[in-house]
Image (cartoon, rainbow, N blue to C red):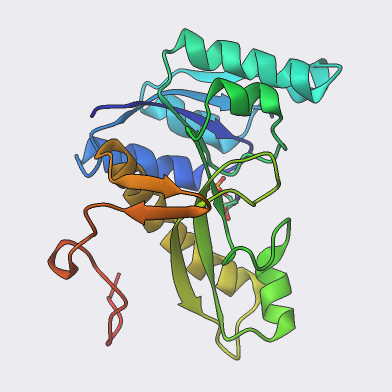
Amino acid sequence: MNLRLGVLVSGSGSNLQSIIDASEKGFIKSKVCVVISNIPGVYALERAKKHNIPAIVINHKYFKTREDFDRAIVNKLREYNTDLVIMAGFLRIITNVLLDAYPMKIMNIHPALLPSFPGLHVQKKALEYGCKFAGCTVHFADSGVDTGPIIIQGVVPILDNDTEETLSKRILSVEHKIYPQAIKLYEENRLKIIGRRVIVDPPLSPEESIFLTNPMIEK
Ligand code: GRF
């Protein structure tokens, strides 16, 4: 089904860009109908404007409570008839006001293999921990922080000469692949939530997807 996506951003918007690109090239049928940032002047807003997508600032500083802020977000999402909410680099903790308005209809992306490394600066934490793999996770939002049912994850190696920057860049390139894939599975109604688990039904076939590959897939 062709969904109307409402994308919440706070910064660069590279995940927003990957979703816009996936929509424009037909990988997903859904369309970004509105982009809302809690911070004015971020590049994500410019990305939206370049694609003639309404780009709106709802500054969290102007609200007394998180709930009041979320109410304003919900009202704007509804104004644009949003079907699915995409948090893409959105740095606010959401409340039940938003969760209740869009139950299991809010996705988030996190640059780590949850449940490992929730929170911030997670690429650095994985590197310093001495992990051999890192990655990213798209999950449904719930009332916790980075704790909702996991939809899809992508894995990248951590190399001995990695820095926080080189690792973050490698993870980000996989984020840009798994977020559109998560939306595609959702719009095809192939995500079945059973307790904490999100099952793809019918499952992706090897012919249908690029799985872990050896040698690696060149960009
Ligand atoms: C990404 O690593 C994302 O996982 C995190 O914020 C970073 C920036 O995202 N939530 P974007 O470039 O603003 O989409």
